[in-house]
Structures are given as structure tokens and as C-alpha cells.
Length: 185
Image 1: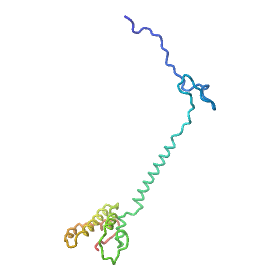
Image 2: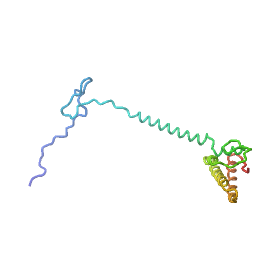
Image 3: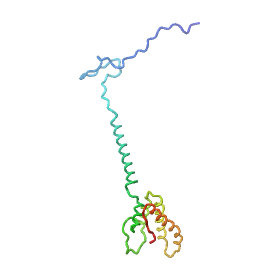
Image 4: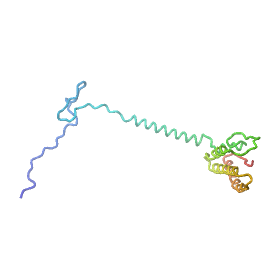
């Protein structure tokens, strides 16, 4: 039987090549790079590495500008700009129309056009105050529905209860914000 562990000749250890060529192999300024036949590519001088910080700084500045813009708009919309529902309460307390324009005393036609209805409803709909938004939009919707009914139909009587609820609700919501309004006319 043969010994599987026979003495084997020592193997050559892995020979490493230097990571950087020796200084005599470095190309000097003005001379073309020398080609080492043992290498597959000619020695080349590497271009200077560009810093990756400029795009990172530009992205950080862009994010900061966006955060500042969004925050600025939120502060403006929440604290500086007057709420549309509060503006309507203020106008009604000063005996003006909902949009703040003066009331026409000689206007005999109190009917709203569709554009006027949508504009008045949007004023209340855009309010940040829940009760003003709820009662104001409901009141505008009820007024529009009653106005669209035929005059000889007695169906408008069915809206008296909800109309009273939303009129008093809007008066209370405006009073909570410091504006006393009379909606009996």
C-alpha cells in the first residue's frame, strides 16, 4: 500500500507583485508612459480625482430651500393670511355681503347666480374653522336648493328646520370668533 502522505516537495509561496511600481518605472513629466511587457495595459497616470462634495452640498441647499418654502407657506396660510370664513363673519357683522362688498339696497332680486353660489360656498368651504365651514356650506347649499324650486311648489317649507339649524349654527360659530351677525334678513 502506498502512503497518501508522502513527502511532497515544498511549494513556492504566492508571490505578490508590488502594489505600486518602483520609482524608476513611474512616467516622468513630458515622457510617454513606458510599457512593461509583464503587464496587460500600459502604465497610465490617473487624472486628478474630483470631489463628490459639490453635488452633495447642492442637494442639501435644495432640500433646505424646499423645507423653508413649505414651512413659510404653512406659517403664512395658518397664521398670517386671514381665514376666509372669519372674513365672511366679519363682513356679515359689518352688514356687508359675504365677500366683503357692500350690499345693494336697491337690488330687488336676491337670487344667486350659479357663479355667485359657487363663490359664496367656496368662501365657507375654505375656512379652517370646522363649525363655520360646516354651517356656512350647508346654509349656502340650502339657499341654492330652495332658490331652484318652483315658486308655486310648497316644498320649500321642508327646508325651514334645517335652515334654522344652520343659520343659528353659523351665528354661533361666528360669535365664537368674536363676530356678532344677524342673518334674519
